[in-house]
Image (cartoon, rainbow, N blue to C red):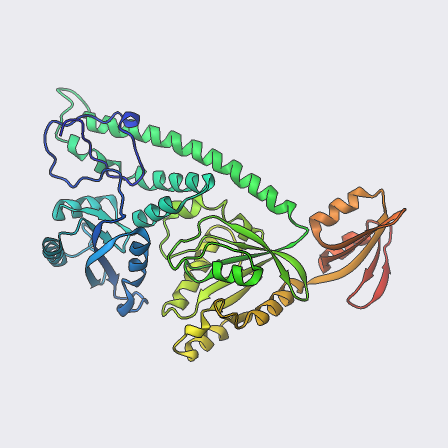
Length: 464
């Protein structure tokens, strides 16, 4: 196998970049040359703790959705319920033997775990089974890498992969552990190569973080520049129907597919809301439970729209038996990236597919602002629009502001702190009809401006 190398990571690493050595003898470990899950056969494995609230009947449902998206053919399944995961191999010894029998019968190429494994657990499982072991995080990263279309998404995925794999470099160089460093040597070439690789990875991580910081700042400026419209952001579990809802509300064509993580890049469209006017509606990447922390961190810039949104529409697949757990997962991820769940509406989508309406009513009862809809049929979209108007108008006042035509500072101030609905210019004055927070009205009065308050139809003259 001269010139061949073993690769234990999912990102693509060139031998020339890492100075990979040539091997002159066969390796007894499974080959992981640039992990590609597509068109591979796999056995799915889950270790579920007994105190887990997930339904025992649906333990592997989400993992099946993930591997379907990744293009994997499932040829076997294995589930174990335990008080705690086995510290060395995640699975218990008896189940490992059962897994070996399944692999022998199915000749599966991969073993995909619904758990996140430590580097040591993955290494021992590969030694035991002679198969490539893929954990939940690695599978999700592989899907994201496949679906990344824009330069920003590719940067984010590469960063997440590097951060995930940095602690797993030991698996890449286990074949060099048998090489001694010589008499008096403190370490062998395998350990030295790991150190070299870590320096290369750390350098690339630093470059990617710097690039993404610029992207984040640019996106933040872009979001702020669009403050002449209210910003409504769709968030939710993956495959909850966010893209279908965006198309139903805006009439714009967006990519829709019945698969997990069909959308990675934020898309923003104009939404004409009856009774309100124009607003911007953005669709963000979907979430799943146990998202790799590195992935959440790297996609922070993509979720900038959600962080600055005037209103969040939390879209939930109400027909999913795990709907309540999915709501908790999304709330936890949003909290992790610094999105406050103060002004939001829980949108219970796919209500036409709910088998038990009682479960839907119980979920709605937990949230003051919630609505059940079907984005596919259009049922409930009028109720949703009215709720959006009510939430966007909560704490806002409609006012007319008149000032001298030369007062450009006031226009700049209004653009930053208010939503300008209409503008009219005469020879000497500029008149703006806008919506502004009631808490900002005193500051507006201090600017020496005459306001007409449409709420009580009274005229207010500012004190200069």
